[in-house]
Length: 354
Image (tube, rainbow, N blue to C red):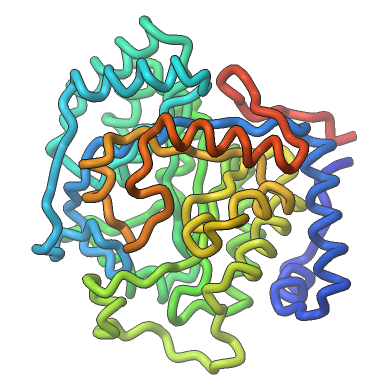
């Protein structure tokens, strides 16, 4: 049985652990579970940031509608097809189309793009479009979309309300939407930020336990990186008051612990070593993430001029590198840790739990 029984209390103890010898044991355990459950191959997903418009007022995100200093863009159909073709040429198995919650992206327009990509390429299609209606999600699933990513950011209700205000009278319920995605037959992904002001070790442990209970197919976690152009970055948002000893730090080491613990409790999930990790450790962040439980990397294939404008947080790794440069760099990095690049779409592997 690959899935590890670990209580919320045990998860929290590991999150608080400081002993380097014990943490080495955690890295080894997570890497062993990863190897047994999903193998040694690393799946590359081509990330395409198709729009930076967003109707939301999320206090941590540079795409929020209140950021007047951000130059907005929306990619054309032709630009998206061109990038999808490059993803095929690079040998990646998936295109991940990501945007802010942009209702300028019309349901039928995107459905037609998805249909054409599925007809003309072997790519799996993943969407990350925020909180869209059930009918939108149904339409995109019928068009051929394979996966949908909708990050929780935190399952702490009070903290979530502070950083993710409701849209008008529409209350945000991302767990409900994740259930709808499963109902529609999507492979479903979510994740959280690590080190949000007001986040406790206990709430983060509960997040990891929630990944297991939701039986997620994909889990993406990364450190909170402050954006000075956001309300939270300007320190003008009041988050729940907690003691300094309970505040989760937004550190590289803590992020690896969350990756490792997520692998242990969700052995079959596809878990990326994120761009945020590469941002806080440009030398070896991605490699260390892959060595501590992750099995996916998402190289950015967005045209550089657009990529600079998709500024959720500043100083993102590989911001000015072309997709071709990223491809060669990643291949070398993955080979350096004795792993190989996978072919094909890289769906979740369902292993026997007997």
